[in-house]
Length: 150
Image (tube, rainbow, N blue to C red; front, side, top):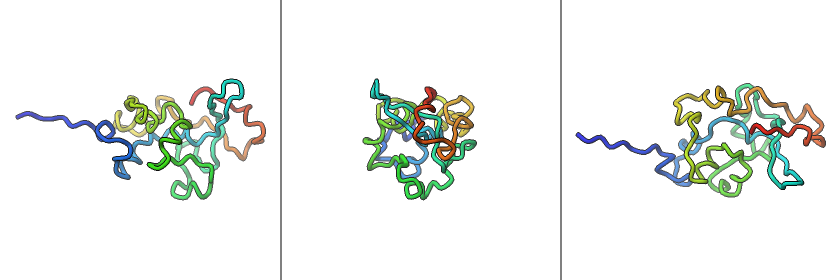
């Protein structure tokens, strides 16, 4: 008997072909997209800060109001099928959606590969316990909080 091994859905479907549940499962839960970003005036490169949205729980890397996040925070980077191509460039380089759009595979620490949701945190690939809230800083001094780890 020949057993044919089927590719996982993220290798056999484009992002636009995925079901809602498949789409949602692509997110690795790193919460890097919840960080404030700036454009470096010298290099014109996108840089990340360790300043997170007020809705982010920095210990769990989960949004406190995921269903209503774009209403509560209009600047929320909520990737979806309609905007993924336009928004991918603003996502961190390790973002699973961005990686798939670039034709790359998911990293070994991604839960769909490792089989464990906490691998993203255990390997240091999330913002877990490394962020401050935007209401705790003077937002005009955001450049003082640029980090190189996302």
